[in-house]
Figure (cartoon, rainbow, N blue to C red):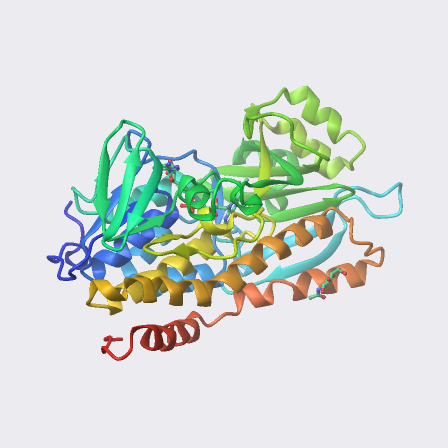
Amino acid sequence: MAPPPEFCQPPIKPFEVAIVGGGISGLTLALHLLIHRVPTKLYEQAPRFGEIGAGVAFGPNSAKALSLISPHICKAFEDAETNNLAETKKSVWFDFRYGDTCDGRRPDGGLICTLECDGGQRAVRRSAFLDGLVKLLPSGVAEFGKRVESFTQDRDGVTLCFQDGSTAKHDVVVGCDGVKSRIRKCLLGEDDAASTPTFSGKYAYRGLIPMQQAAAELGPELAGNSQMYLGRHGHVLTFPISQGDTMNVVAFGSANAWDSAQWVKPVAKKDVINEYSHWGHSVRRIIDMIQQPDVWALFDHPPATTYYDGLVSIMGDAAHASTPHKGGGAGMAVEDAYILGNLLGAISDKSHIQGALAAYDATRRARTQRLVVDSREQGMLFDLELGFDDPDQLASNISQRMKWLWDYDITNELEEAYSLLKVHCAPLAVST
Ligand SMILES: Cc1cc2nc3c(=O)[nH]c(=O)nc-3n(C[C@H](O)[C@H](O)[C@H](O)COP(=O)(O)OP(=O)(O)OC[C@H]3O[C@@H](n4cnc5c(N)ncnc54)[C@H](O)[C@@H]3O)c2cc1C
Ligand SMILES: *[C@@H]1O[C@H](CO)[C@@H](O)[C@H](O)[C@H]1NC(C)=O
């Protein structure tokens, strides 16, 4: 089926954008630019689109940004999403429980609090959502097997240098190449400490359990609706994916350092079982059911002092990779694509590109870097490392700290970005 007409109109802008990386960031930005009729090229290192099938969840701010970009993009998400199975749990983000009795001082599985939000838990398999986005992209926009190594730029544009020895020149480049971004490295400089991701002190085991088995063991209420079990130096969360056919498990743990060059690797099930052996029965029976677990080291970025230089910019994980404790990384990428796509869509002159990148940087940097810092803190909160011994205080902190992320009016941010754009690009008019 051909993509909807809004993505296929003939381009009209006198400049071409090159996007490096075809994950959630790169694809959403490409689609948004096509709506604004900006000539767009996307380079992806892999031989085809595709990603591991891990679950990713979207909060209210993420869903809002998706729908503001395009109802088709919103639908791609809705077609792939899974919610809590019980009708009474549709607006629940997580039920927070004690998973570790803390030497008998806490009830095993005891409820700490329930946090609700608009839409509740909305999870997709990343691969399913990406498939939906790829279907919207007209053929010819993406080129595969193109790994960018570096770039050079002059007043006239940016030259990308690929691993295969080829080069390509474009008017502006946006690095959407993820946490290990080459564009970030070249933009900030190899010796800038912020150009290298840091180990966050946390890792995660990930596993999938057939829902039938999970429901038989835990009961349909706990298996079919999102749960988060807190403990000392770790926490375990579960939520339904694949329209309720599968229960996704993520079990977090702490380490001082990550010595392996591999960030994702298979682990022996008995080692995971052993690690959670001092936890309560509620968590141990979940861990027991995981087949073929992987471990993921969680890295994030020290704050970059800028998200652009000249005609090159970074967004998504390339700009602000964070730990997953607020479930906010992918949503921030979509917000970035909303702001940057609108700014580049508002200008009609090549000489205004730098002004658009400057306005994007000025409006996005503080909010996205706040996510990185707050997400680390939230991980420590869930791992009972912040000293909330009183369950009521713990519940109150958990209930308050998602507000700044979720209750956000990004259309105000866009207005602010347009004002900055007009200042940067004066006296020539920009059409917003
Ligand atoms: C364990 C875990 C759980 C998470 N859970 C959540 C969650 O629940 N909710 C949420 O919102 N976020 C979550 N996130 C974060 C979320 O996955 C990311 O924020 C999001 O996927 C970032 O998308 P991206 O497109 O910026 O980067 P990526 O998805 O990393 O995509 C980068 C793309 O660029 C390509 N690429 C890389 N280098 C080059 C190069 N040099 N040249 C060409 N192409 C290149 C890659 O092949 C890839 O396709 C989680 C992250 C982790 C690690
Ligand atoms: C939660 O607790 C942390 C650590 O004490 C504190 O920094 C943060 O401000 C608190 N947040 C809320 C919303 O109460």
